[in-house]
Length: 131
Image (tube, rainbow, N blue to C red; front, side, top):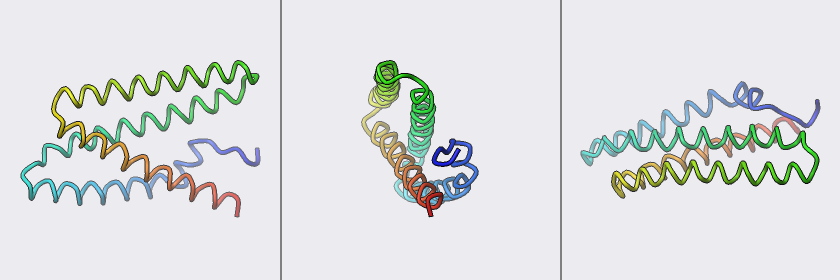
C-alpha cells in the first residue's frame, strides 16, 4: 500500500545507520566517562537507549493497531496506550532516581539521544519515500 510503511521497512532502510550512529556516540560518551572515572554511567545511558527503543516500537505498534479501529474506539485505545507508555517510562525513571540522580540523568540522556536519532531517521526515511 502506497503511503503506509511498517517498522520493518524502516529498520531495513535505516537500521544500520541508527546502529552506527549510536555506536559512535556511545564510544565518545564512553571515552568521556572513562576520563572522568565514571564509566559505570555508560550502562545507565544504554538503559536509556533500550527504554527509548521499547517506547518507540510500542508507540509504532499502537499507532498501527489504532488505525484499524473506528474513530471513537481509536481515541480510547490511543489514550490507553499513551497512559501505558508514560507509566512504563515513569517507572524506569523512578528506578533511576532511586539509584541516584546521576544515574537518572544518564538514563534520560540515553533516552533522548536514541529518540533524536530514531526520529531524525524516520524523517529521512519518510522524505526518501516521498521523493
